[in-house]
Length: 637
Image (tube, rainbow, N blue to C red; front, side):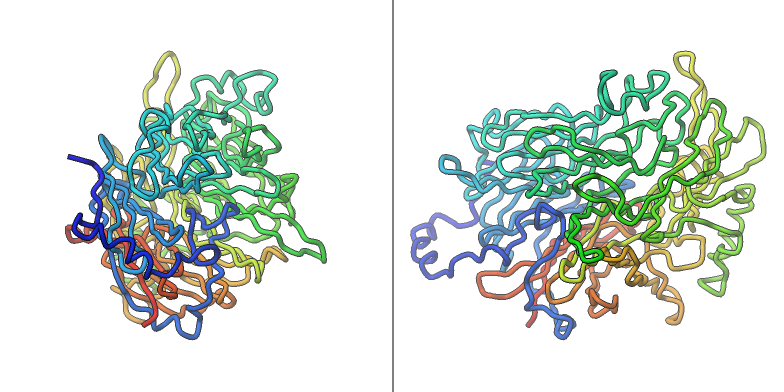
């Protein structure tokens, strides 16, 4: 049976020339959403203005398309996180098993490609416009395979790799980023790298390794005691990449080294882990780098690519990049040099007491902007019945006591060592290992000079303990009173279990006083936080207490009419805010949480649409009815 199913039956095929003749031409340019972040610089900013602060409250659902149950549903990061694209009048999306082309005005299926022996990436697809000899292509990953489909028919492109398939040798689960004739992909498996492939043939063009492999390579000296050897970390798992076309520069990001919480066998700063690296986008040649966390002991990955924007600062146009980070800070750098725009200071941080560990004595902390998420904790911050409920507050107080109390000396507090048989003594870390900011990333409004990001205030808790030995080396890892993957939240676990994050769901309210999640606007002209508002409600609470903010995964977009659209929060809602003030202007319920980046576009009918994938099935989510996963689309009446 063919893997391509054309949506139009043979009886209607003869009418196609007539139908096309009657159809208006496809809207292009401002009307499109042609890539994951809409543009190479990652602004996620649409020039469309039909939907405005004055009429956004009138948005109504106009169609939806079922996405199917993601194979990883119920896991820590389960469910769909897909951002569709709209190019030349066609929407391209992925379900749990296939890639589809849809009419963006109605959701009518144009073609469908069922992916053999695997599932398509649940994050996004890329579009290459073709050239004189090759038609336009849709590019996506499935595990370690890079697949090219003809954009018009959905058939694999014979001249790309082996009949449309390229073995990348490493898994990448994000959305391919297309720049000129180069397909850019990261890595979800070691060795950590970013790579460029030829969009015509699929041939590998270049690779930049995150861990320096030769003594003369930049950063090699930051891996002491041969810590670079067999290093499985510093992968590049971000869902997309950002590029400055004027400078021909890709700003690649890499996550933390391994193991996440112990660095006794990798002394040094560990460059290019936890770094943004400027590379020539066509060759992979190194230009500069900036490391956001030295010798990471907290799993503080850079979770999303930087947003790029040109802003006027003190009368001078400055090319900036802004990294919204798990650490709870935003790092604003000059794109040409990698130097801080508003100052970043190396500040002393507490030392680790874990045997064999040699933590960095300082960490880079921005002077401006101030923290975009909570970065400290005091005993007075624990939730009480006055903020939520007596049951919630009692559980949280008991968890503090079971943990042996909490240690925190501010940003980058290390996990303390617990010797075998010793009583518990726990660090509480804000932000925890999920942030702060996470993979949802940023959106910008060039006219305001603002950049927007959703953040979480959720703590990790626990200690470091010895976990046996291997090859003559003692092994150390994190644990807690509620297990290894631990959060300061209303859910239980056992010290010998997987942790209280597994299966915790929407009722796992954090244990510090709200807000627990925010939407933040930073003025990149000054480095100041322009506004900050809670993102999400807890409707189980009395009305006066509901505006708690919620844990969230996903990201924002902006429009030229002055709107910020975002779902993300785990209260099953999709919202619009005034970009100047942060005022919530529209909210609508979703059947499942929308842990994705939305899009907006204009159809052939002249209408502006807004779309979100709602299929969250992670540790943040409660189970949903079977078949509820859907791409949901809205427009004005």
